Image (tube, rainbow, N blue to C red; front, side, top):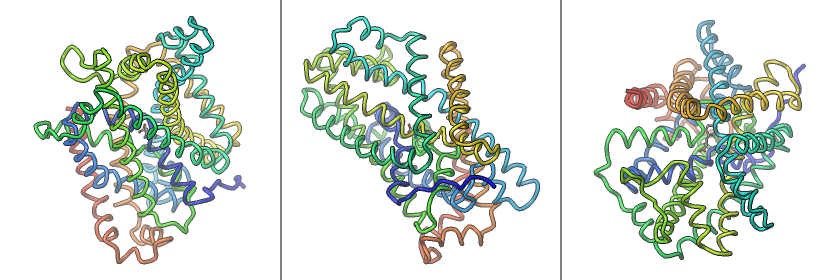
Length: 448
Ligand code: PFF
C-alpha cells in the first residue's frame, strides 16, 4: 500500500499555492522589463489577451488531468490514455516534464540565491561588516554556491513538510506578505522624482512594436509565468478537492498572476527612471533599457544607496519580495520530481525531498561553475523548447487522448452545470486544435 496522498485543506490554500507557483521572478522581473522593451502598454494588452486565450486553456488541461488522475505527471498521463501507444507517450511526456521542471529549478535557484545574498547585504552593512557586505554583492563562484545551497535548502525544508503543512501553509503565509511588500514599495517609489516618466514608458502603448516578436515574447512569458508544461499545475491540481469548480479556480490563478505581473510593472519601471534621475545609467550601449541581471543587481541597489536610511528599508523590502516570489515558485518545481519519487519509486517524502533536492543542487553547481556556457543553455532548453513542446503535448492529451465523457465528468465535479457554460462550449475544441496550433506556430517562429 502506498502512503495516503496529501491534499490542500482549503480552496484558498490551493489558490495561494498555485498563484504562488505562478507569481515569481518571471512576474516581478521578467514581465516589466519585457513590457518596457516591447512597446509598454502594447505588450501588456497582448499579454493579457494571450494569458487568457492560450495560457488559461493550457492551465485548465493540467489542472483537470491532475485532479482526475490524482497522481504525478507520469502516472496521470498514463491513466488518461487508453491504448499502449498513448500510454507509452504519456509516460514519456510525464518523464520529460519532470526533467524540465528540475532543469528550471536548477537555474532558478541560482538566481534566487543572488536575491538571498542581496537581502543579506544590508544587514551585513548595518552591523558594520563592510567586507562581508561587499562579498555578498560581488559575483563570485563561492558566493553563488553558498546562496544557491541556502535557497535550495529552504525549498527542501518546505517540500519535506508535505502538501498541507509545507506547500499550503507557507504559500498562504507568503503570498499576502508578497502583495503587502509590493504595494508598499510602489507607494514609496511613486513619490520619488522621475517616477512618472517610468509610468509613462510603461503605460503609453507604442503599437509600432506590434510584431511577431512581441507575440512570441508575450506567449513565452505567459507560459513561463503560469508555470505551464512541466507538471507543477498538474500536481497541484492532483491535491485539489473535488468540490471546487476548476474553471473558476483556474481563472482566478490566471487573474492573480496577470494582476501581480502588471502591478510589478508599476514598481520596476518607475524605479528605473528614479534611478536615472539619481544619476544611474538605465540604457545599454545599444539604447535599450537595461533588463538583465544588471538591472536588479546593480541599477536598483545603486538607487537604494542614494536613498539614505530609507534606502536600507527599501532594499530589504525589495529583496525580501524577490526571495518570497522565488520560494513559492521553487517549491512547486521541486514537488514535481518529489511526487514522482514518492508515487513511482515508493520513497518516503522525507527521504525523497533531500535526495532529489541534492541532485538538482548538483546540476546548479555544474551550471555555476560553467556559468557562461551553461546558464543560458539551461534557460533556453527548458523555457524556449521544453515548456512550449510539453504544453502542446498536454493539450493533445487533454483534447485527443482523454475520453470526452471522463473529462466532462471530472469538470462537472464542483461545477454541475458546466455543460451549459460558455467554457464547455469553447474549451474542448480550443485545447484540441487552437492551442496546439498556436503554440506550435509561436514555437517554430521563435526557434527559427
Ligand atoms: N512561474 C514562475 C515565475 O513566473 O517566475 C516560474 C516557474 C515556476 C516556471 C514553476 C516553471 C515552473 F514549473
